[in-house]
Structures are given as C-alpha cells and as structure tokens.
Length: 65
Image 1 (cartoon, rainbow, N blue to C red):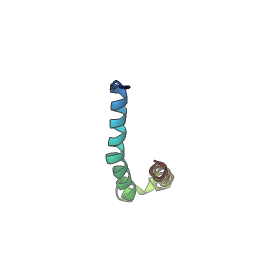
Image 2 (image 1 turned 120 degrees about the vertical axis):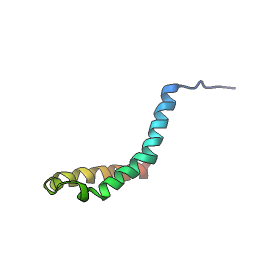
Image 3 (image 1 turned 90 degrees about the vertical axis):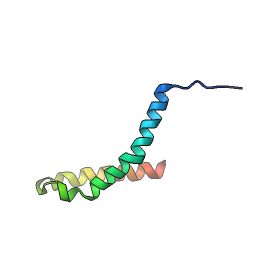
Image 4 (image 1 turned 135 degrees about the vertical axis):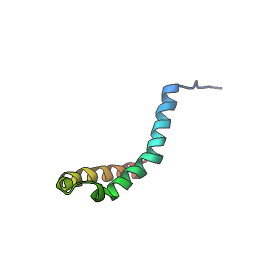
C-alpha cells in the first residue's frame, strides 16, 4: 500500500486554481460583457483587442480542460 503525504504547496495551488475558475472566469466574462459602460470611449480601440484576447484565452482554457 502506497500512501502519499499531503503537500501544503500543491493543495494551496489547486485551491487557488479552483477558486480562480469558479469566481475569476465569471467575473472576467462579466467585465468583458459590460466594458463599454465603464470604460471611456477614448480607450475602446485599445480595450477591444485586449478583451478579445482574454475571452479567447478563457474559451480555449474551458474547451481544453
């Protein structure tokens, strides 16, 4: 019988990852959906590719998980 010892660092990393997935991804998607309401119009040309990259990254992460 092989027993593995609990490693605090690995447990912490997995907890942070799960929290980021459960809370972070919906928060990012909400911000991306409503970015025109809180971002000044002069930054729209800069924000569009940044938010496009973030949303594509999230989509790929969810599909490949």
